[in-house]
Length: 268
Image (cartoon, rainbow, N blue to C red; front, side, top):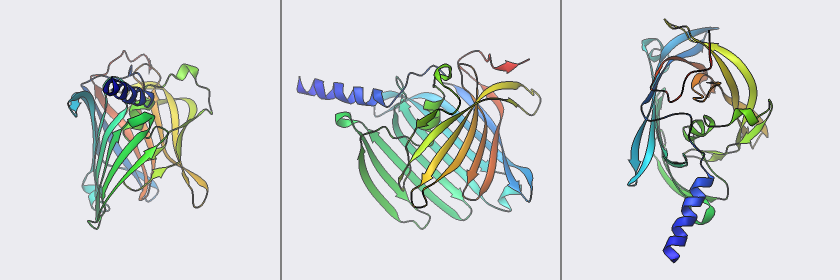
């Protein structure tokens, strides 16, 4: 009986950090064109691929989402960029389970890993980091609130019910990486449109969100990413404007397949 109660508490805790998934399914594949702001012009510098498939984590059903980005020869001549992000989320509620980021940015390469568990109604995060000098650090922390990473935040945000939101609404979303937890949140900016490049040139009605983080030392907020998702049940990310440590970048959706719902956001 005690074991049963403990298991039930863990499930409830995990569910509280999740959300019902109605936006995507296994087999969704997205491709993005990446642009970098270089000498007053936007230059296409590579591609990004994002996939979500059904898998298992710790012997239980889970979604595995992978994002890979890579620069082309134009960018490599200036700044090498090779990032691979991997995330496992609960199949039933998208609660974060595991996160890994391996990033080569310039001459720096580092790895962040997070393992999530939900004992006694809290969020427990095991943290492992290998910095660009090869130094390894390990830590474990407990939080009373739900904690996310840069992958699981997108999975959850895609399932927000925008019909209940008003322009200017703020959604607290604390983010963890291999170094620290960041005071961060999403700001709902309302609606806009986005037109794909290439052969399709589809035009979408979009919901627009900004992801902010606060520099506690300077007590200043910083818009890290502004992202556009289709205003339909898929909430497909079609555009990301990113303010990165090494410059300003954009990601534009080039192709998509395996979406779960009808693309009713397409403007004809």
